[in-house]
Picture 1: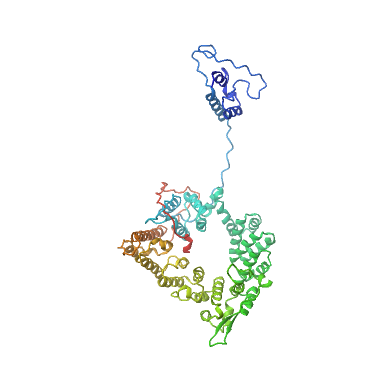
Picture 2: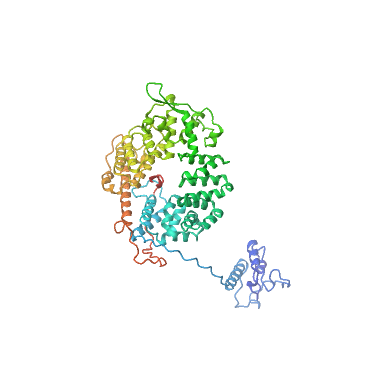
Length: 613
């Protein structure tokens, strides 16, 4: 910068740099003081007064600056000084704003507080959820994130309230993991909903619970207003809450706006009618069979077929009976099948999809849909009063056995019929490919879920004992938690056999993860012997013994941690002890507010925690 330019960029003697408008400072900063020197003086930008000519640079000792006067800043320094003066002046003249109104106090939560040990445990679980993932091998430490649903379920069953200081972390966890929401929202209680209303990121809690609160408050006007004006998610949750409370009221709510709803919304609302489904819903569902949307018609037909006394069920039974008959012409009784030759308009109205998926024949596709929708009770009469087990054992002519049995499996699942489910599963020792029902493990697990919990566990234990763990994952996922003793022993024995075979444990990581969450914690001491590293056979995978030892140590550690969680949530024989004089509006007792030690997080190769039921 030349001396003349620097002098022109410096404030003029005797003038205030703060008199320069802020816009002038911004312009000089953007263009640079070389191109736009800082102009200071009594005549600012936009002033009509003539600007005095800038004097030349004073010589040292001249009267303009004086021998002892501080030399004014030049160029960029002058610009920054002017900006600083401007900022101080603006801050000094700032008027205080009007304070925002305080929120309404949080409602009371009269449930008893958590025991102190359980409160610390919850803080540790939530802190580990947000810890950075270490990746790689999991090691022998339990995966705490997979235990959060079990902890929340236990705390909810025992009637404790969530600690106030942990509500933000709980809501953050539920926002990140939708599988936690059914546990977090009831546990958070009214104070959690109050807090969620103050943060837009937690609005999911309000959408899921507003309807239930209005139904509980018995406020039909508010229910109607939310149904007509609420967001879609709020309306779906509201319909489910109303159906759970009074099915007829929910159906009337939906019928009032049915014709004005979009097709995709009608589909979701209709699916919500599964809650409390009964014969009184038949007229509404029968009318939905004429809906413009094929998907809506399909769901309506599925719901009607779950009502054995419905007109649709009778129509489908009539069609199915014309296709499946008892053939007595041979030596013994056989099942004769004649699949339909066309899919007429009436069949399509009743939910039969005319176009089959790729690779399926039309006639077998139509037959499966007819048999699936027909009430299972009609087959007992058709086959001379035989039981489901006897009917399933009959030979089927012309290679239709797989198609017919698969349709009966779907019908048993839809109609929740344990007798047919038991018959189609067959003995657990029979290989799935040659069993009486479907060979699909997914469909077999759905059949197994219909049986009572004890019978379900016994069947799964027999299956694991006969076939090992390679095909047992989905079946184990529908068994009640904790696993019954025989089932737990079968799973552990199968894992031990797999270790002796010399394979790596990560081939069974899914089952091992289920065992960590579903085995009875009382089995931990008995499993301690499996944690030792055994000598590897010559044909074993290198290092497999050490990996198995690590996996069993993690299993034992997780079972002991689950037992500790249960003890921490137990007081006075398993019931929570209420406060002697609970004060809902008192300041929360934070106890030890230091941040809990974060356990290292490991890679997660386990299935979702909901797989354990």
